[in-house]
Figure 1 (cartoon, rainbow, N blue to C red):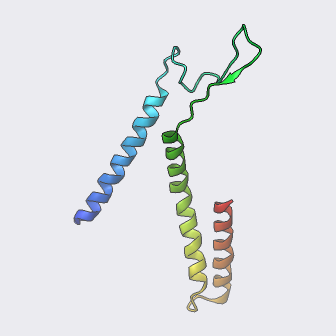
Figure 2 (tube, rainbow, N blue to C red):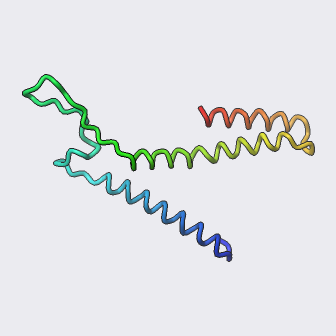
Figure 3 (spheres, rainbow, N blue to C red):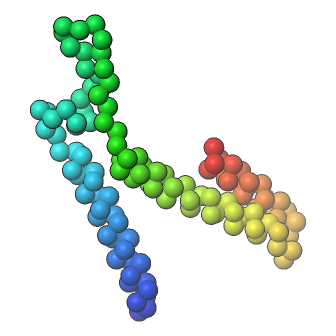
Length: 115
């Protein structure tokens, strides 16, 4: 990290976010087999005295939020790289062959990322 305060703030903010995400996963991994909310049990309950089974899945908002944040964080780098390649394909200072490769590569990278 640099001598600048902003660099240290970004580094510690990143560390805090990573520790927070780690805490969520560690808490979720502790297995209490008596608890109906753990992930290692089947989500379908079929009582012996009933013909009807019910789904007891307990997917909540915080879990989906963390999932989407991780997906966005992992896919954003590919999207940014693809956009930069397309941007560099418009530079006249690059040879025509390189510009064509940059454009095709950037378009494919962005397309695959958005798929």
